[in-house]
Image (cartoon, rainbow, N blue to C red; front, top):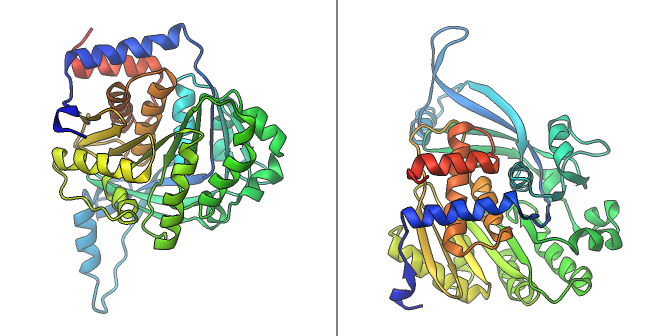
Length: 382
């Protein structure tokens, strides 16, 4: 990729292009999405720094402050850190993405860990707007949120145990084909935790792929945190991607730290978090993985690279997020909405950061109208 292929972030015109694309939702039928396979019950908690009364406290504001408090308890000292539950909600990369897309009016089928034999109560509202097929019990996690990030403590065995057979026990191949055939996008989320997902991709390609049209529809993958996967697992995943790309348009997304675990499997490493370096790294990584596009996002910026261009945008960052758990999944939802509407790479990237920006400020998923209002507010474009 030449340096002059790198497109700088636009200003007013890019925002107008986003608004034009979003306006299509008022007069265009959005293609359906089929997604899977994780599912969690998330409890958002705050770590207490100082308790003032039975109802008032000061929270630990940063991960650094939290880590310093833990280090102070080292060398044989004990410590109790109080956690205050703030919210219990649907969790997992897949359910949060599916829920956000449904808020945009996208028809979504979700196959995942939502509870067996009955759906867990936290997924009751979720199932009213999304067609659901549960294949296992959900995992459970406490997300300790700070102003500069979060620490997720998960109990994930039920999710890690999911396999292709888990899917087939609830959905015969014939029914799965019927669900996938009209889809405009397929999404496989949370490779880092769903241990058999590489096998599931290969089974999906073998059993479902032959029944689909020759048109390569988008196949979106978010690895989530791959740090616990072995080098062998990672290499198998990387080797599967080109085979998948022969049948689908493969879009692979993760944050900057997570990308490094995949990059090592193909002999790459990130030089720095300077935009120019990240863009070069993203382009090299996409080429070595043999996929259509690669997307990397973090709190301040997002970059993407396809076969034609490398682009970046600044994120709508806030120092005081109302919620951070699910911000990346909302980025993915905005990006995928752009894919479904036929947007270009730069516009889709901007929709991703705008969707995430709205979510962390409002602690809820935006509708299309919410997103339009937010874009007009932050861009001053009417």
